[in-house]
Amino acid sequence: MSDDKRAIDPWNSTLPADYETLMAEFGIEPITDELISAFPSTHRLLRRKVEFGHRDLLRIVDSIRRNEAYAVMSGIKPTGEFHLGTMMTAEEIIFYQSLSDKSVAHYCIADLEAFADNGIPLEESHEIAVGNVADLLALGLDYKRAYIYKQSEERLVQKLAFIFSTAVTFNMLEAIYGPKQIKYYLSALIQVGDIMLPQTEEYGGPKPVLVPVGIDQDPHIRLSRDIAKKFKFVPPSAVFHKLTRSLLGEEKMSKRNPMSMMTLSDDPKLAERKIWSALTGGRGTVEEQRRLGGEPEKCVVFELMTNHFIDDDDELRKIYWECKTGARLCGDCKSQLADIVSSFLRKHQQKREGLMDLARNIVEGER
Image (cartoon, rainbow, N blue to C red; front, top):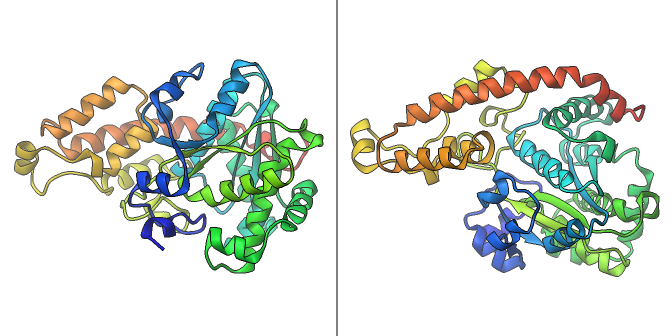
């Protein structure tokens, strides 16, 4: 098995070495300029090809054009605070929900997976989920057109997982995920239930469903599409984004390594310190940087600007070329980003605090 194939694992922190190779090996279609232009509006993740691949995304485009119903499905494993990787997925579900008033968002709190993978009791993950949902609301989700639920309490998801298990074998799961403990295979089937839930009669019947995910989640998408065909569901569509690197650049940003991630609950001063410690694409000395230019392609700070914190494309291009030509030093970028992030966190945390009661009511099914 190649290193890239080992990276396609929902439960590890490995970064793929080559996204294009993964696309070719797994039959993922590229996000093209023509496809981007087919949407009624755009988003920086689309424009900048951070969302780089898809499965059946045209099905969603067609639903928007025809003013027909579709669902956007995503979720979070409630193991800790929202970090920038989970924020990316949240922004995607909010964006694709916003493209049509016929869209509905389904947001799963994957507390069963948190128990299986991380050993977090349901009572503990419940409290974490309240904060996670408050973050989601503060980022802009229209909760009036959304169904937010816990895996442990949505019996229909559990029923679907059991039914779908009749169509898979151990060998099939091992071929998709590699050798794993049974708990991971059960978690995978539960996630298929999550993905199919919007198509059940209780939620409006068969319809296109878009699942925005990191490339490491593609095994769940492939399994879901296989099962959908066997049970006469519409095969779910997916859009894949590049994985957010840790601040040290060595692996994907993950709650398993708190010191190398940035969360939406970080104290702004702590976030600034993390940025000043982050990996850059700078040269060894100021003289070399001025003479040779930097390497923004390797820089986590520039990646954070690209993926999360600078919406203006012209400004981003200016930063890129100033770095490449040596006109900009790493300290310039870190100082600029630290100011942006500090301001963002203060505003976001204030909004989040004001939404905690609503988030609790949603998680506890009392809205």
